[in-house]
Length: 340
Image (cartoon, rainbow, N blue to C red; front, side, top):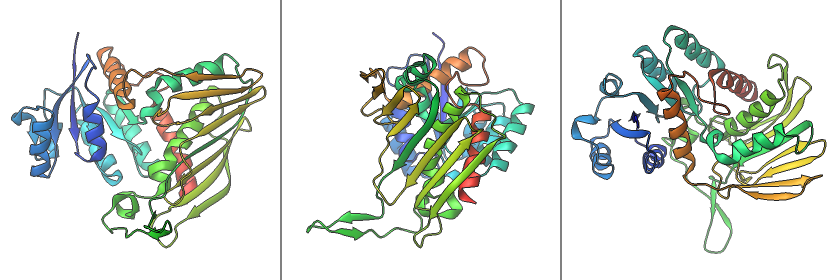
C-alpha cells in the first residue's frame, strides 16, 4: 500500500496528540518535523523515531523537503495564513489547524492561492471525520428526526478559575504569552472553540442546501471580562430561514461539548460533539434509541487516514463531511460577524 508522507510544522500540544495518531494507520507515515525549539525537536525525534535529517530547525526547510506529500501546520492561529500559503505555493498538500485563518479575507486569500496550485487543502476539524459524525449525517439523510429546525451546540470549559482547598473558586493567573488570551496570536474563545459549533451548524445548513449568502445573526454576546479577547460568547444564526443555530463558546464556564439537533419528528443529542469521548448519539422522538458508535482509532487518526486516501486518489478536497475550502469560507464569514 502506498504511504503518504507527512511533515509537521510546530510541535506544541496539539502536534503531540496528532503525531501519536499515526499508529495503526497503514496509508500514512510521519516523516519529518520542524520546530524553532532545538530541545523540543530532539525530544520529538527520539519519541517518534524520526531520522535526524528530517528534523528541521527552520520551517522553510521542511516546506522545501521533496520527500513530503502533505504538511500539517500546528502553529499559533496568527501564523496559519503565512505558512498555508507557503505550502500551497510550494505545491504541497496542506492540513492547517483550525481556524485556518483569522478573518474571512484571509480565508479568501487561501482560496485564491488554491486556484493557482491544484493541491489538497483541509482545515483540521477532526470531528468531521469521526464515525459518529458520519452516522449523524446518515440519520438525518434517512429522515430519522424529520425536517431540520434548529441546532444548539456548545464548546467550553472554565480556564479562568480553580477550586482552592476549601472548595471555593479562585482566579488563575493568566500569563500574557498564553496564546488563548493573546489577541496578536489569534486568541479568544470564538476563534479557538466557537469555530467548532459554527462549523457543525454549517454542515447541517449544507445538508439543507441553504443559501449562505442569506445568513443573519441575532442576539450576539461577546464577553471579554477585562481581557483583550473574548472569553464567554454566544450567537444565534439564521441560515436562509431554513435552520436556526444557537452556538456558545467559553473559557469561563463549563458548558461542555454537547449538541442537540432538533427536527420535526424528534432530536439527536451528541454527548461529545468534538472528540467522541464518549461516542454516543441519542435519538429522542418518534424513534427512541441510544447509539454507541464504535471507535477503532482516535479522532486524529480518522482525519489522517481520510486525507491520505484523498491524496492517493489525487483529490484536492477531503471527502464529505470533511471541511472544504467553501466550508472554511462560510465558517470564517460567520466568525467575523460574531467577533465584530
